[in-house]
Amino acid sequence: MAESLVFRDLPRGWEAYQQHLIDAIRPLTAEQLALGAIPDLRSIGMIAAHIVGARGRWVWQVLREGGAELDPLASRDHSGVPITSGNELARALLATWQPLKAGLERWTPADYDEEVKAERHGQQRTFTRGWVVWHLMEHDLHHGGEISILLGMHGLPGVDI
Image 1: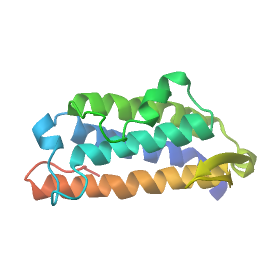
Image 2: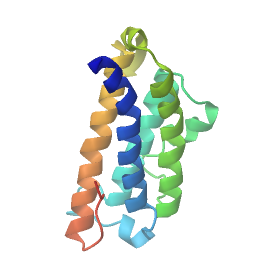
Image 3: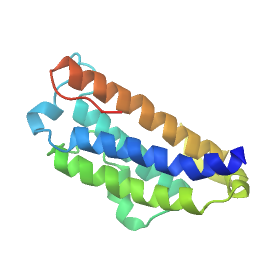
Image 4: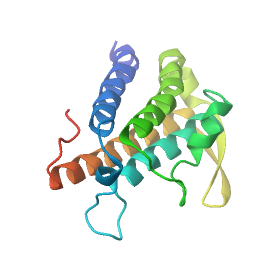
């Protein structure tokens, strides 16, 4: 019974968090996205772009969910890629969320044990689908928290959970 609740509630809970993150990012201007704690740390926009890039890499390139339209999003956090607007980042967050959500709704408990391969830190590694899902969730929550703190530091509405 508990297992079915986890698999039923996980996509819904994560999607609600995702929507709160999008709602916080969407209205931001380029100037607001450039705000950070100190100049040497990532700005709000850079952190949001990093969430997009990580999802693009793990969801499309490792889990093979979605399609080639995610390729440009997988490099969204590379240096030199401009951060244009909150609306653009919100669309990218949604585009990387949709295939992940589809997988979360389709995968069975046994699917989470399936092994996938990925290059990580220059080495070919093997992970389970479950590990990748957990890693993406912890990554979203960690960096979403950073975004919320930075927004609050600058007097802007944070991620409303």
